[in-house]
Length: 77
Image (cartoon, rainbow, N blue to C red; front, side):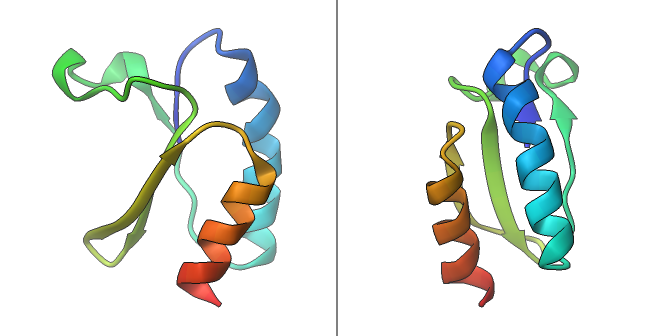
């Protein structure tokens, strides 16, 4: 999850995705957008990259729990 300081949707959604990925035993990392070079920062927050090994298999933005669950289910279940 890439989050931006002061982003309310990021603050609201972070515990939801942390709990869900913990339940499913899926590694989860958070990155502060401010620590990224400006030219590679995503346009929307929160932003997610779903990876398997070293490959990005899906990416999306927003705080839809339904979207998050469907992406994870499609790629991990």
